[in-house]
Image 1 (cartoon, one colour):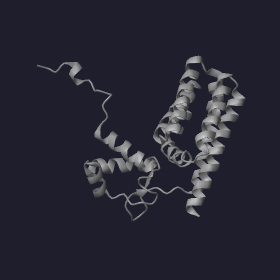
Image 2 (cartoon, one colour; image 1 turned 30 degrees about the horizontal axis):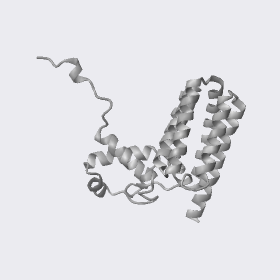
Image 3 (cartoon, rainbow, N blue to C red; image 1 turned 90 degrees about the vertical axis):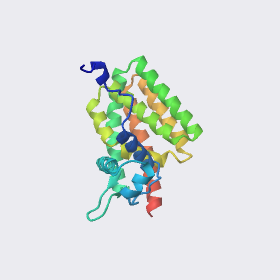
Image 4 (cartoon, rainbow, N blue to C red; image 1 turned 60 degrees about the vertical axis):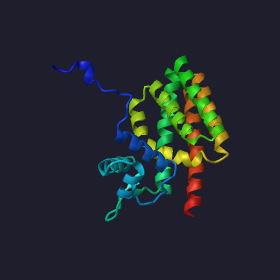
Length: 227
């Protein structure tokens, strides 16, 4: 007998082995388990992850599109290095995108959106207090996703998402500093208050100021590492 349509339905709550492997590798690079410039040997990764070489290759190719892996000519894949010039450009783009989205969000925000961003910010502060850096990254992404979505900036969000892996890699550098655990949430509180007041200009300024402060910390940390 023909299979019922319900038996063909895909369970979207279950992630594939490839997706799980991709998340694990991405987190390992962002969390600096793998260091910049470190060779990523397929055979070793297969043993560490317990997956096939086909999956490892697919994941490495995907991470290369995200800017987390690079394959220099004549060499195998390695963790992408973070240079100062690229970092400056990423933060400049962030400031433009987030400033524009913040202004748009301030014009269009409703109480539900404000509540969702407020909840995300509370979780960011709790994660900082617990030293849960992965939680900080996840809830920060959630905060901005709501802000861009509320401002109806779908194209801008897709651009931001294309940089998200590298943005989170840089965030992982800055959030480990003791200063950022207080200054970061305080800057985001200022942004949230401007959004709550439906003040586009203040929201844009707060968003851009937050990015500038993060950029200064990231560039300082990278210069120290590379100098």
